[in-house]
Length: 493
Image (cartoon, rainbow, N blue to C red; front, top):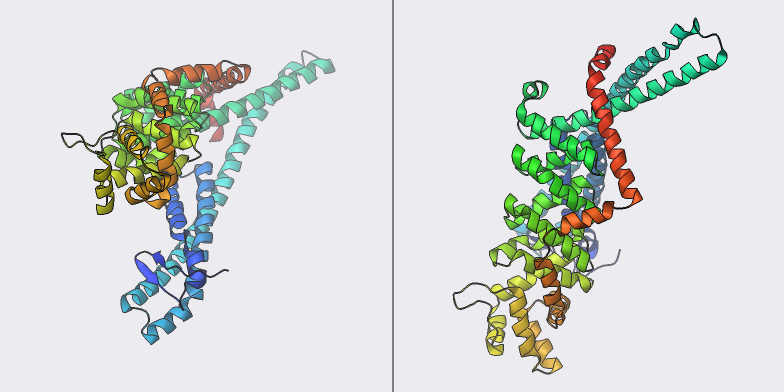
């Protein structure tokens, strides 16, 4: 692996090896971020498994994440061990501070322990998967037995119809009945599992669920209604309700919000669970209220429609810049428009959000050099009352002042005000001041109903209508399961 001459920071520790950082820099870069990201996702799956310990999908996700975490942790440990000799020699020669040496040793031990813990969790997860597999086989056998009982009904008619055709026809009917029973059972089981997750997240008791408490019925009815009238199934709608519950929405707010999120998911082409999670996360980051939901989703849909980005990418960008957008008093429509302008210049997703955040910070918390340059140019970041102006107004003034400078002077001025890594984004915003920013912002400002309109358009075709029909059939299967669940339970005993 190639060597680098740069220093690499690991959790506050700088280590320099023989005048460069050797393999240490190249291999360690980004590993901690990857491990932290995987650990965060793993914690989320573990929370879901606590609510539904027998969920096969969650268990599979956990195994996949554990495998990724082990691989990243092993790589990190290998790099630390490979550099242990060099670091010890530096310490003995007095070239490495005691504090840095102790932090390295601590990092090494922590990584070893983490790897052992992950391996133990993997073994436990493997055992759980085997157990779930056995339980699934038992359930499948019991459902099959129930179908076989339906098959036996043909014998009642054998005494009445002696013709082979009649017998074969009855067998076909019995087989169809068996397949239908198995299908309805699976659909009903999946929906019940999803609703159990929602109820648990909402803090309901098993007694409230079994007795059909009013709040539980509201949630179930909302999921089933969406399953009957949209392309998303009742089970998918229930999963979305669970994300809303995890975000702190109460029963009434969750029921009210669900169909609106369904529209955004349809308009954006996102899967329902991811869309719901993205909406709740970004709204929380922007400190928006549920009353802001309709307008917020319409702005996202319109921005994605009128610029070179997607709703999912917008969500990624918003998560990066939301805190700064909120603290600097920027409007949501200005934020969406800025991300759209950056996307039109190939700066999308989390990258766009990061650069927008950095530009806002450079303007609102400038260095002494930047502050002096802004003053020299006559560009005001705050208004007469001390409030931060909209970023488009600031860039509009900045663009006008820079137009009077030579190319070299312009480049020097921008380098004084902004980080060099953000200059491509700065130039994209300045180019937008020629009219494209105002044009896009006008579209975003008049986005009322955009989400519903786009969802209707997306569904107004054969594929969309077939998806809605499939979802309705699943709802019918749940209804059948409800009516025959008692006999199924009796057969399983």
